[in-house]
Structures are given as structure tokens and as C-alpha cells.
Length: 175
Image (spheres, rainbow, N blue to C red):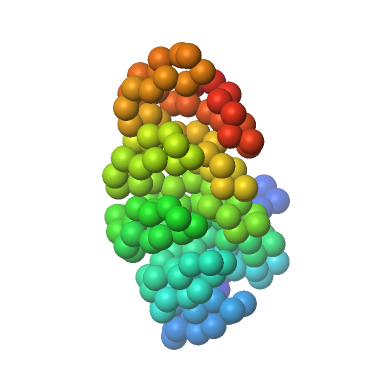
């Protein structure tokens, strides 16, 4: 492993390196090539060389994984679509800088993009790279952009309106 320290912001240092071969680090199958660690040597950014089971789904090989300084997976960029906790998450675009899927610290799905319009907690959500769907830790819909006009609590809400819910599933308004 060849490394160099990079200071991104005052007081924030990362260690960027290059792996000569595929290897396991902290239980993750890290692909040869670029790898980044937080200044405490916890993985920050890496690519998987093979598929890896995490939480209740499988990350495909070539997934880019981004973790916080405690090692919690925060974001992934998948090379293909992935089914996570009942939601089909868009993958396959842009490599390391591609479409991101994010997670809460407990590993539950936080935000994703759907290729198609989907119904989440009874709400028709627009599927498009421009319209993320966000969820609470408990899996309840937090926000989405409507795929069609609906009536909620007697209020007509038009297609492409961004709507919000509280963590119990109650309507909380529009953006």
C-alpha cells in the first residue's frame, strides 16, 4: 500500500493510497487501485472487488462505498440496480461519481433513486435521477416527488410536487 496524507480542510486529513492487489480490509473486499482512509485509518472510500453481503442485501462487485469516520456505510454507488429493503435502487451510471444511494447509521435505506415510478407507503413517487426518494430509519416515507396528482387530507397535490411526511407516516406538507 502506497499512501499520502492529504489535508482537505483545516483539521481534516485523509490518507489516500493505492492497493497493488485486491484484499480484505475491515471485513470489506477492497479492489486494487485507489483507496481512501479517514485520519484514524478507518475506510472512507473504496471499491469492492467482489460482491459483499451487508445488512440484508448484497452489494455487487464494483460498488463504490463511502463510510463515515466510525466505519458506518453512508453512501454507495452501485454498478447495477440493487434491491434493498423492498426498494429497487438505481445503479449503473457514472462509476465513483455516479448515482448515490445513502443509508442511515443503523444501515437502513435513507435515500435512493428509482428508475420507474413507484408506490411507497401508498404514495405514488416519481422515478427519475432528478427526484430522490427519502425514508426514515423506520422505513416510512419521508419525502418524494409525486408521480401523479393525488388528494391528501382533502388537498389536491399536483404531479411533480415534492411532499413530506413525519416519521409516523402523517402528511407534513409540501416543499
